[in-house]
Image 1 (cartoon, rainbow, N blue to C red):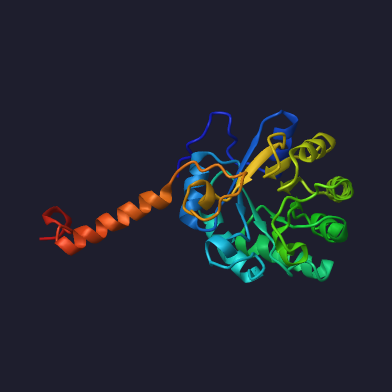
Image 2: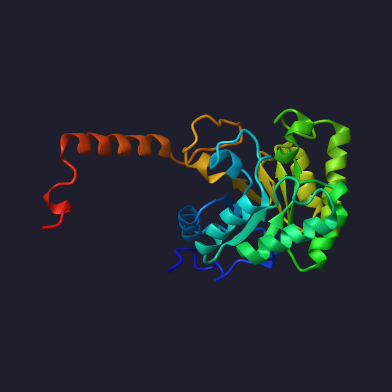
Length: 275
């Protein structure tokens, strides 16, 4: 398995690599993957970090929110991804209610994700209320990525996917939460759908990298859902999304051409069958 990447890409990206990238002023690229084939393609293309997101609930399972995903679901998807990756850092979401009840349960969940799926770290949503939980997981030797701003697992609490932390009070709380996450041992933090000016302030104050999604250009890195940026999903059109391909149309054309060839008897032709 050969890796097609830039000459300065390390043979294996670690959490320390990501922290060093911030120190060196090098932007961090991150995309999602949920299966072996997509993970292999994204890794070979040279991505720095692959997130096995609980967004699999939306793009793979068709649910409206990320809430239905279970730990077993996530371990399955993460193990598929890990088998397709050679170089990228692989981080997996701990799903809703796999870490919120007790810190002991959270540690067990994180441990299962590491042992059974083979990921390199886990991501948890939230700030001050889960600091003790993060500390416990980090103390056990498991790398943790934080997640602030719009936290999809809490969608029923917020009631909307609108931009978070637009008011002074919530913005100050997010900044304090970011500091707490760094102190607790997080190696990086995802900032989702917050004002660019606030994301810039958080990024400047932390020594660990920030990864933005709808959080402006001054974050240390960026993440998108791969299915969205490839244009496989036509319905999702947030302001922050840039589509780099229109694979929905391309795949539709390919499938329709296949159907036509089968119906007409053109497929398989003489060269595509055995004598």
